[in-house]
Amino acid sequence: MNAILWVVQVILSVLFLFAGGTKLIMSTEQMEKMSPPNAIHLPGLLLKLIGVLEVLGAFGLILPGLTKIKRNLTPLSAVGLLIIMIGAVVITVMGLGVRDTIVPLITGLLCAFVAYGRRDWR
Image 1 (tube, rainbow, N blue to C red):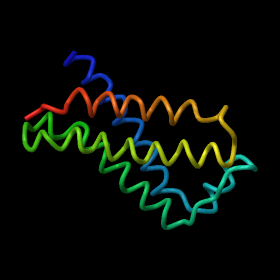
Image 2 (cartoon, helix red, strand yellow):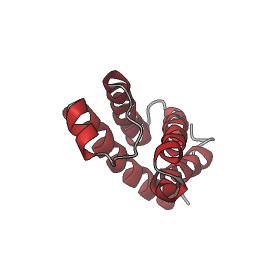
Image 3 (cartoon, one colour):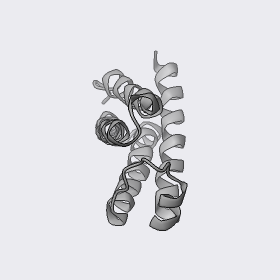
């Protein structure tokens, strides 16, 4: 189970580093141009905040386990990212419909799996 959790943590970490880094690097106008026409557009500062939280969460999934310092931060990072994914599912349903929620839903479920699997990690 430990190996499966590590694989999921690495995959989630790469995913959130990419997603958060993209939100931090790109301008709000560029992100709005890339989004589908029915998507709900969030304010630029909120997108930047989400990007920062995603990058920090990605580091929180990996670094505590690698350094063996404050390992209890890993399940907290996973819960924080789960909350972001719940918001992503809600925003996606409101703008694009249920069909397009599969990616944030699966990502959120994987975050919940890590949070549950690492809950006793000390």
